Image 1 (cartoon, rainbow, N blue to C red):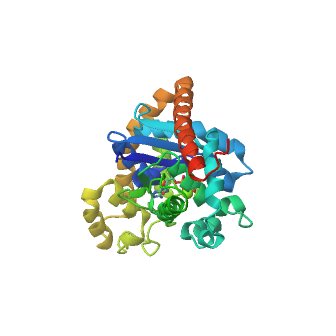
Image 2 (image 1 turned 90 degrees about the vertical axis):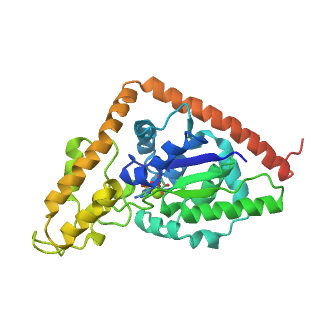
Length: 328
Ligand code: ATP
Ligand code: MG
């Protein structure tokens, strides 16, 4: 069977280093080998941002620039808009008939995100978003889904939905496998377990040199380490996590310097700031090329969406037949 890759991001804010190590890096590699689909998840963004459609609108192009800046190649990857594929919504409704509310309520990611989201109650669309994600993945019969660790429960649900559908109706859908990046969950600059666009604890991929320096400077470190001569605990420090992610070969040196109090926090921060600067510099160049050509960017999104729509229509025809919904 030929492999097909699907991934995507909620259109809620700029992409950051967590996305890069969690999934973008893998996408750039996989696109060379496999047919790749990249979803701009604007409907899923509405599950928490339904009062802010303008924010979603702005970020649609910004995130596309993020993709292009890290090296997602529009000739190899189909970038498309979720809300412009009505078949995804249709498939979501059909799947929702055989997914129980209890399964969704007990999903650990739904639980933790609903705590963080600031929503005053549990909304129907939010509770059901993992079902809509199953539709995102299955409409194009993706087999590989590069994601961060928080997405694993959703992938498991998608696999269950596929099995159930295939056994209830006809075996036309394909079970996908998750592919987790080298850093399944990059910690936030505030020490929160996850760097996240919605939590304001991230280093965006379009950061300037000054922004990188500022975010690193204000990042929390081990609170027990007040003076340079106090030994530190690297395992609870976001800066050490960034060393592991972006300077893996020198991470043991950093650990030693911290634990033995031979290296101070500001020197340690300086090293990581310059490594991140080196990583982001070429991204800035690619970004500015496309930012100066908004028509090219729009064309990439429109072409990708048209292509994805064609595939969605084919799958939906098969689904209707399998479910005996083809009356005439
Ligand atoms: P939001 O807070 O709006 O949900 P997010 O930062 O969680 O934003 P998503 O668009 O929900 O980003 O996730 C897109 C992809 O990036 C998912 O595969 C997710 O697992 C991955 N990802 C997001 N944050 C991190 C992180 N800190 N470390 C590793 N992977 C991450
Ligand atoms: Mg998220």
